Image (tube, helix red, strand yellow):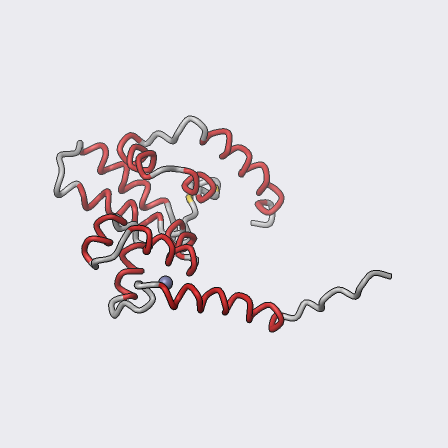
Length: 169
Ligand SMILES: [Zn+2]
């Protein structure tokens, strides 16, 4: 018989993670920043990384490192509404067509707090698409209502996968 497997003991795995977190923390300016919460909130709400870095005297790299270490990327991805809010707000600063604002508002209204796209007759997990969209594609989507070329295929796949669960209601 092979060596007994290490029991799935959560406490056995923790120290490793804590150790790497501790190492991150030691060298991280953001972890020690007195306005850390504010910075994290700004970043996960799709604030511009360069601007945040400038504003708080940090580097973009340090923000990205911190975001990776703390799992903030996922948090930000789920925060699609915040990205759309920014597009809607931007309407006040730059010249945009009325249609683009309307489509951003419509998109905002259809996405629930978990980042799910809610249509009247179906619920599609848009996160799979937003995950892969660049900021530019997202911006273009809000302006034109058009998803990137690769999106329909991915959407079909997502819908197909979730068919089993859908029947449950
Ligand atoms: Zn950090």
